[in-house]
Image 1 (cartoon, rainbow, N blue to C red):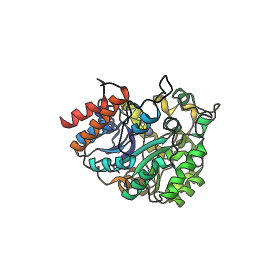
Image 2: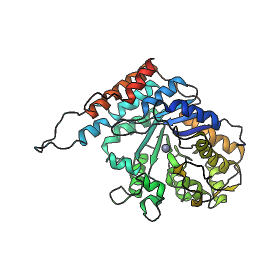
Image 3: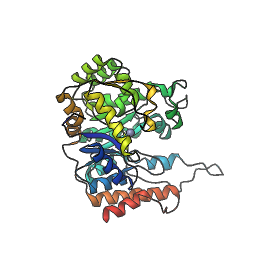
Image 4: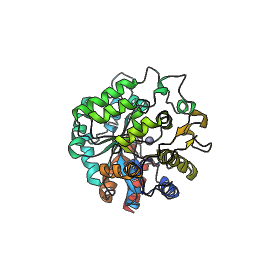
Length: 377
Ligand SMILES: [Zn+2]
C-alpha cells in the first residue's frame, strides 16, 4: 500500500472470544489502524455483541463496535410451534427491551453505532417484518434523534435472484433467492420509505448498497439523502462493476469523496494471507491504475479469479484520506467510545438469560455468559 493515511476498516466480523486475538493479529498483519466490529443479529444466539464488547474493553483504542439488535421478543412470540391441541403455548416467551430502548442501552454502555442486517434477503425471511412497519417505527425515530450511526446491509447482488447467474460460492451459503424471498426492489422501497421519514439518519450502507452496476442511481440516492454513505466492503462484484468504466467511477468517487468509506468484510476466521488479500484488493484498486484478478489464495467468498477483472482508479491522496479514515471518523467519532464494562457485562447477562430461555435450559456453551465473565474478570 502506498498511502500514508492510517486506515480504519469500517466492516469487520468477529466471531467469539477466541476470535479477538486472531483479529488483532490480522489488524497488525494488514497494517490497519483500527477496525469497526459489525455485529450481526441472529435467532438462537441473539446477536454477536458480547464478544465485540470484550474486544473493545481489552483494546479500546483499536475497536469500534456497531452492535446488532435483539429481536428475541419477536422470535419468541412468533417462532414457536402451536401445541398439539392447537393452542399456542406462552411458555418461553421472552420480554426483551423495545428496539428504541435498545438504542439507549447501547449508547449508554459505549457502543459506537448499530449494525443492521435485517434487510439481507435471508435475514428478512427469518425476521419477516418490513423495515418501514410499526415494529421499527420508534426505533428509527430514536436512532435519528440521537444521531447514532447505522451500518446497514440491504439486499444482495442482483445475480443472487437469477439462478443461472448465481455464483456457486453464494449458492452454497443459501444465497440463491427464489420467489419465497422478498424481491430486490421491494427491499429498496421499504428502506427508502424509512429514509424519507427520517432523512437525518446517519447511514452507511454495506457493500455499496448493491448499486455498483448503476452509478446514476447511486448518485440520485446521495443527492436525495445527504446523510447516506456507502462502504466498499467486497461483495467482490462491486469491484468488477465499478471497473467497467474507470473514468466514470473516478469521477463519481471524486464528486462523492465524502460519502464513501473503506471496508473489507474481513472475518476473524480469515487467515492473515486472506485478510491481506481482501484489504489489498480494495487498496490496490483505489490507489493504483493496475489491472488485476483475485489471487488464487483468496477466501472462497471472493470467488474464483476468472469471475472478473479489476481496474484501478488511482485516486488522489486527499480523496483516499477521506475514504480510508475521515468519513468514518465524521460518522462514528475520531476515537472509539470508551466501553462501560459494568453496563456491558449486565447487557451480556441479559442476552445470556435470553439464550437459555430460547433453548429451554441453561446452556453450558453460552457465548454471552462467557463474555460477561471476561468483562468482570
Ligand atoms: Zn459483512
